[in-house]
Length: 43
Image (tube, rainbow, N blue to C red; front, side, top):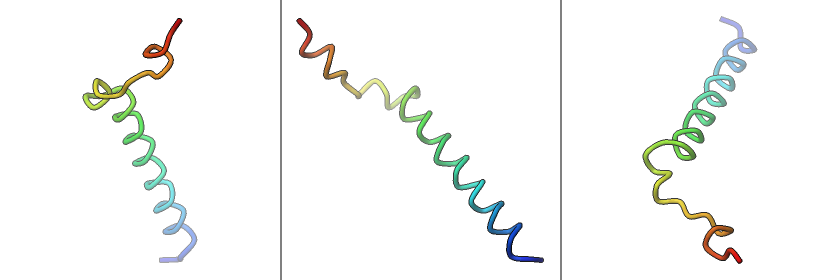
């Protein structure tokens, strides 16, 4: 197998994994522990 497709598939898989993890952190179960600093110090 050639190197270029393997590298492209690996980088694409890593990007998809990190994007999925970011969505899980932002909107999933752990997001209840995040605080909004603008809400906390609102006027």
